[in-house]
Each structure stands twice: as structure tokens, then as C-alpha cells.
Length: 544
Image (cartoon, rainbow, N blue to C red; front, side, top):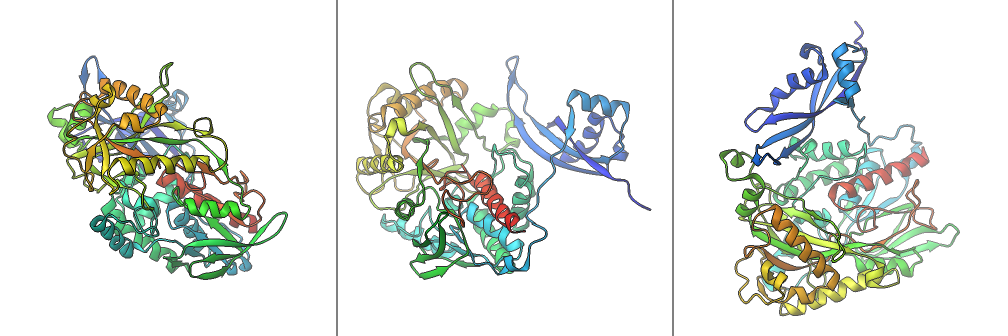
């Protein structure tokens, strides 16, 4: 007997009490869609988020869920039609695939190199290997185990390894972060990207949790399996291999014939370059080889740290139900005014800690990270505003140079040993020094400093306005327990490598593909992963 064709519909905005099991959602979704639960052919949670809003002065915590129902294609009941007309149900997006059909055998013998083993590079390599291309992945940093030893040396000696650190190495900068997977990008490759992480051991709730994260500890278990999956498909990895130059056949368009690396020359037919937002020497080298570089706006500010209990109480209250949700996070925005630019929180790490996210001696930049349990008693996030060429000056590399100057100034203000300048929120607002910053999760310690004077006026004014605004949303946010720790200068990169919008090719090149955050096309783990996967897929489609 031939099965009927089906269609998937997304049921929007279902409510789920904190104590209710997710299994209750299947029948609830069917009723909302106006169909008999017995007629449902398949069910999955598509998105799940916490609703902590106050209503009439009361906070009733609950989950809001979007769910997908697989129904017979000819479902046409009256209640179903009414639900569709009202927007209560909508056609569900169709997930994409990494597979490109119809590839000629010659493609599989192509010499394709991916530079950078962060999310963009790894997913580009995954798509290529999935389609039979024996891709080679290079990274200047160490493999996961070696990278851990190098970081341990930094913590002991306060001397970073310029090649293998919190920013360079297997997994990229995201390896030592919260492992956040949420994104504002709406792309059909998001589902297969997440499914690959689940295959490697990530929890299945990352497929639908609106604040999905993996955690640093789980990432360290997952990444070797991800690498092994690429190797099992014919790919290979070369760590501790820095890109030093390009052997270019002049155009137009120009063509990269080989890569000059710290381990020798590597011939190639195509190159995907995913340098990450901190490979400034690589960007300078690319400009010297004629690769187009342009300036773009980027985010600049500081980290702010609070006791996690203060954030959780401010977001969820102190009732018994709040304990079911675990440590709370936040995403705060302060609009621009006549007196200050806009400000917002970024990379919020509940139950996390602040780290020195640096790769070169003599500079200081902070970032946040947390493990899967969010077990630290501290919560931290970046408070940032936008800087562009109007603020940091003309020239494609002016933003990088601006970052470097500020990072050197904050390094010196901390005493030149990676101690971080710190200032309590009320003192920042009042323009006075904090004599005793107190405890912090930052591993190298903090020291008193006038962060309000170290920051450019634009960042100071934006953060001050943000603190006042956020203090009205989360009680105590701008109080004595709020500690500003600086500097946060690499929330995003200040350059872009221009590329063709459709084919992803670098301007003026026939086989060079800039991808990910360092190339200016992503702003986090998932958007970078999707960008790398999309570029690799388009490369293959052009050859099919």
C-alpha cells in the first residue's frame, strides 16, 4: 500500500508550564492546528524559549514553543483551515542538505585547502568531504590536546603562545567560549549544521532551544569526533601550519596556485580562507598579495560581571519555579539617544568566567566562557557599542590598528602582566576610581583603573547609558556588585574581504573563497558555520 504524501506545518506559540513534560506538546499542537492527534504522522519541537515577562505586576514563568507537525498533504478540515488563515500554523521551513548531486568524478580529485579550523573552516571542510573531496584543513594553532597544553603554559607564565592560544587552534575561538549556537540567521543549512553536532555528542535540545549552548567542556569532547568524521570521509588536518603567503597566477581574474606555509608549499585548485577575527598578520599578508580588504563597523566595549544569583533573581524572580530554569541569561539593548550611541549586551555567559582572549604579547582583550553546567557563581557579558571608519579613521586596516592601540593601553593600565583594569559600575558612572575591585572570575586578577577614561568617549557614553537602562530592567545591574573588566575589543572584526554575493569568490580571484567571521561574514559560531557550509556547497554546485 502506497503511503499518502505528507506536508510539515509549524504550530506557533504553544505554552508549556515549567513542570510539564515536553510529551504534552504533541496533542496540544494537534489541537491548536485543528486536527485529530491520531492523524499526526510526525512531531518535533522546532523552537523553545523562556517567557519571563511581567504581566499586571506578576511574573508567571513558562516556555513558549513552536512545534512541527507532519500531516497528510490533503488535510483540509475546517478547524485546520481556520488555524492556517489566522497564522496559528504556517508551512514549516524545509531543511537543507550538504549533499550536492551530479558531481563529476574530476571534482573529487580537486586539491582544495581550507585555512582555519574554526566553525567556518570546519563546516566548509565537512561539506567538501561529504561530497567526496579530499580536502586539507590547515590551522596555525595546535590540535585540541596541544592547544590545552599551550593555554596551561599561558596561565602559569603569563606569556601567550602567539600561534596556539584561546583564539588559534582546533575549533577556533569558539572552543573556549560558551559554545553558543543561537543565531539571527535564517538559513536552511542551520538544521544539518546542528544535526552534525548532535551526531558528535551534543545534546539534542540544541536543535530547538532558543538559547542553545554546548559549553566549553562538551566542545572539547565533541571536536575530536567532528574532526574524525571529516577524516573518515577523506579529509585531512595539518595543525601548527601557518599561512605565510600566496603563489598567485596573475589575472584577471587572479588564481592561487599554491599556499606558502610554515610547513612548506601546498599546491591547490581552490582555497577557502577562514582566518578568524584575530589573525591580523594574515590579513596584512593578504593585502600585500593583492586580496581586496575593506573596513567595516565592529563592536567595542568591556566585560561586566555580576554574581549569577543577582541576574537569575532579576530575570526570573525568587519563587520556587525559578529554580527549575537554572542560571538565567540576558540580552539587553539600549537605543541611541541625543546624548549617547546605542549599546547592547553580547556573548552573555551565565555561570561563566572571564578570560584573557589574546594571541600577541603586550595586548589585553577579554572574553567570556562557561561549561555546560554553568557552574560558576559569576555571570558575565560584553557591553558594547559600534565603531566604524568615521570613529577610527580612513583606510582598510585602520580599525585593526585602532584595536591594537586600545589593547596595548589596557594592557599597560593593568600593569603589563595580563592583570585586567576594573571599575565598579557606580564608580564608572560617577567618574571615580574603584580602590578595591574585589573578587572576579578573571584568572589573572584585576586592578583599580579608570575604565571610563581608558575607553574612547563614544564607548564610555554608550556604556553609561546602557548601565542606567539595564539597571532599570535587572535590579542591581548598575549597582556595586556590577564590575566592569576591560577591554572587550574582538566581539566582531573590523575588516571584510569583499566577495561575490552569489559565488562567494574573493574580488578579482577565480578560486579564493573568504568565509566566516574573520572575513567579515559572520558574528558567532552558527552564522560562521553556515557561511562556511554555504560557500563550500556553492563551490561544488558551480562544478556540478
